[in-house]
Image (tube, rainbow, N blue to C red; front, side, top):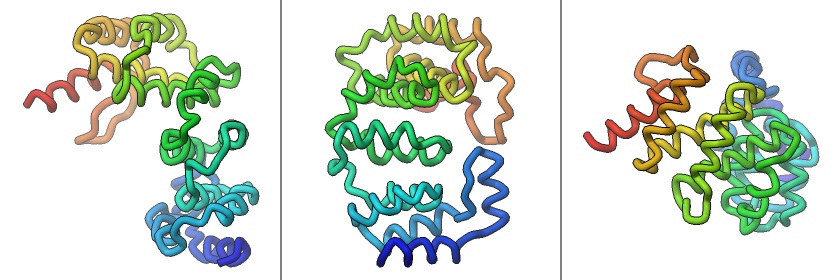
Length: 219
């Protein structure tokens, strides 16, 4: 299928109700994600088509591109450029989680993005750091990360704050020796303490998040 054909398919999947819901979360597209995934399954992996879809700058097309691309085919600079272009939350999240994490350049980009002056870019660095906290913490200065969180979390812009808060919670969950400190930082800063949380969902407030996940693991 050509990029023109794919764009026609995406246009046919446009749903005004889905767009209204997505726009509340900062995402400017109207395609149900389940239908997007079904189309990706039909197309299978097509790196060249993925690159063309990304170049359209259309959000639905970019999400589809991230589902059909070959993550290891991108160079370090290509991924850096893509991240800086990814301004909607869902594209940003899928790029980091579905592509960058599978790339050989993930660690290099984590370090480069972590202290970037652009808070949206920095949030990607923190997301990759959180992944390392959970899977491969050797070599990370966990106490140093908590120092940064303690100093900067409260005043960080929304998306960066969310990523830093996730890292705080992940340290508390995965590293018992640092759990009390992580909980104390969360309690003192009170970031996301009053975040509206649906029933049967865990609050993103770090002390509650940490204690709930640890409780479930020990149940």
